Length: 354
Image 1: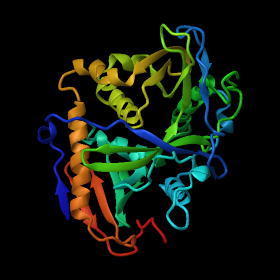
Image 2: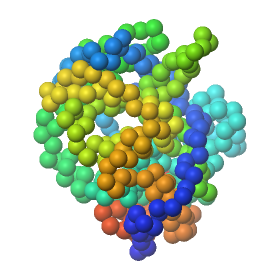
Image 3: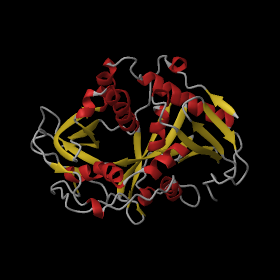
Image 4: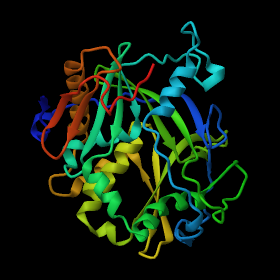
């Protein structure tokens, strides 16, 4: 079993960070995967961010639970992006004409976010399987024992609170640019729009899927030209959380990491009370979040986050050598060092099937 240190001092040195991520394709999820933008939502901002009234409990009983599919959808997108002779088929999957699906690593953004935060969020354990296939490392996340116990203990009230973020999105989005949000509809969290991004950390190339909350249309300040599109994230938090150190130490770290990975420039936050009522919105600019969080004692540092992720990807390449989808290496973080364990062929964690 190989190990990798997570000591902050080891990674606290200069680093250039993530190269600007580039969108290379997209897909929509409903009852099945579709290579179009039918599930893309548009951000419809309220006229006054300081005067809203969003009841996040509305239509909760009609909400459908999410069905997890590991990395099946991004794998299908990659498979369908390449024709029978290896040629790219952009009409099929929305793959950009000048893009290439060959890469070092394939995964979902959610896993990358956890890895990026590892050294600064030691209570957020993670576990994922790695397999090397045709020169590419595929990373598939699995729930830790801690996560399984947490989910098992969730009350109905806990489940409702977790769903509030999805309802918040409904108050702020519509299916088209000129439409009006309709929060009276039940929310199906199995539906969503996903971008496929390519990026680079250090010497490592990555392709990963990212769920998109909405696209925002804005006219640049001081111009009368056409609107500019960019993606936005939606988050909620309590008014009281702003007074806690944990808001800057952990919540802003999670918001920043999720958004920076996919190149999302801004986050719209709704401040709610304990009853699930949102009365005020505020915009956080992704690039400003590290500065906002920097006035706490021993703040998290973006160079530490990027350096650790770079070293972790190098660690994977150094330990996973067999190009065989039947062979899995299991990487785990339980608050100490990262461990890497080679499993027997065809273990329960095998997830690629030719």
